Image 1: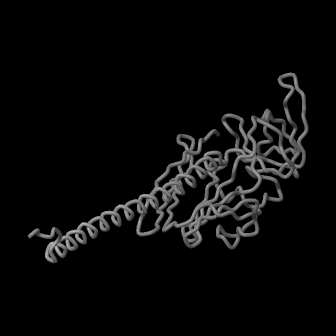
Image 2 (image 1 turned 60 degrees about the vertical axis):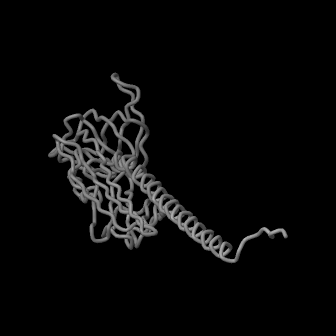
Length: 264
């Protein structure tokens, strides 16, 4: 009599249990791998955001008018005045002398209503109204015309909106031109860039800057820290940027330093 071949009930139960154990182990491994992948993807996305915004701010801040950076830690905003033009001047109506014109050799053309400043030392002074007596480091351009001289065919004669008497002289005979500020503010977990708003804002805050253009630059930001060391005759200006990005229980911190060249 032949024995019938097959699995016994006990063998089948043992096989099912072993398969269940292997299946659970594989499931745990796959789940853990997926969790690691999700965490890695989240971290990479946060890093990409952080690198984008720090590089963007670095490129903008390094071309700011020296000593024009301001920070409001309460509203978590940072602001500066981008340089629109630079020039070397021939002669300066230095106080007590005054004039409403000045000849300069510019990097490129000037625009009406641009302001020019010589030896900037205070950010708020660059934003304030120019004194009615014209005694200041800042003047506003009314007109700019090419003026050929024996030394150069590219000289430009600037005409100011009023008689101006500059209170400082640049060792390098250099002036900076600017028009409107740029600011970045953290609102909730989003970082916004503000531009094309008036110089006459009363406070460095989103409410005062919203009259200009507003553009979102980054999201998922847990905190920011802005610090500035203004330039002097012996050192460049330094702006420190610190961002902490957070998402899906992942945190990424980025620290970035920006030097603002001081060319008095």
